[in-house]
Image (tube, rainbow, N blue to C red; front, side, top):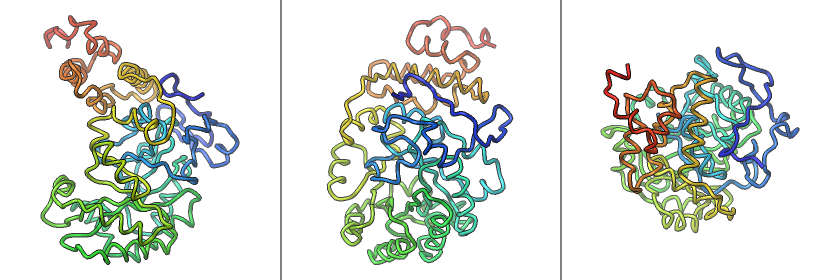
Length: 383
């Protein structure tokens, strides 16, 4: 039985790519089909798991947040939720460091690669790379409103060009066997006409897209920062629900402003799935209840302490394999003890720059109050 809280599984190298540290494999569908990396079939965590019925919950792609270290933490907490990468542009993959952008932990499955781009041939080539590395899904970003993304002619501005999006989706579907999905908004700027998003979905669906992840806000392309675009445009969940009624054979997953089980339950009565973003990052312990509540699994006996311990083990392995400093990983788990007595002090320890030279396990002891003297040493004594 695979359990990321207990063990870390490194796959046997196949078609290795030299990273400068160790040989990291690119796997094929045949590798997984052979049972080479077999996992518990009941967890839906074997590569290709998304080709069947999609899980109902997922964690959103979040710039600077949902890297592989964050996803490892989230997978310790939920074995079922689909995890998404940060958006990776086609240019970064075709002209940059492929290994840096696509490397992930085998434990992360099911994991989806979000692409940013608009040129069909580049999207197809990038999708092939993602599939070759073992991702379970390729998702096209049609929702990011940042000016930098707009200058690249992708993100939310693509909603104004549904035919181009359809061409990109078709090119990717022709290139890979894994699902190709689209994440988008319900409109751009002041456009609140339902027909706009309905026609966008209809056009892209004709190209073969079967699943749409809909951020239930408009994207303002001018005048609002990406941060403001996540808060100021009003949420209109009814638009996503209407899309589901108009396209009952397609899958619709709602995203935006969902922070409680009550909200998740309400949405799941009307659409196919829920994608959670910032709340999952700031309050990751919430994910520990998802598998039992939404997937019918038996509640696993995990604790915050066991998760913290597993993350320290991961930090130690990452330090050896890639030279990753522990604090690049610890930043993602600072919300793990939110609401508990001593949470503020615990966060302070794991984010204390004076401890950066200490090994992760020593920091763990300080965070748990087992080595107070180490934390109280003057900074000069640490250098």
